[in-house]
Length: 84
Ligand SMILES: [Zn+2]
Image 1: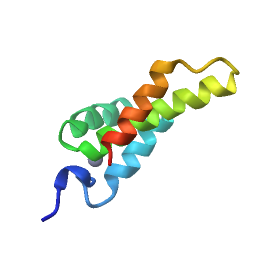
Image 2: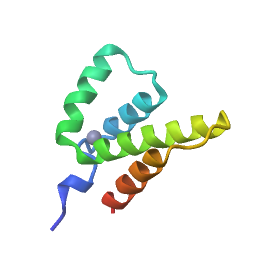
Image 3: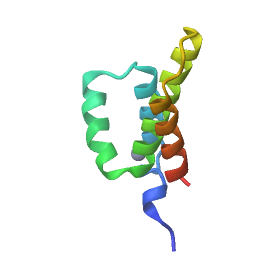
């Protein structure tokens, strides 16, 4: 019995491509609108997007040599653990 919530909702792969565009900050307004609706029904993208955003933020802070907020680390940990 498969668990659909853990798989990309869109089997064609558009889903993952769109996710990448969103994380890169290259999405058009139309893509953003679509993605906002999409993550309501695609747990896979929601988790990947949240995790991707948190990791991006972490990298940005590391690169600027600022201390990483504990909250951010906790959030990433929570997302990673809940993704299992
Ligand atoms: Zn998706």
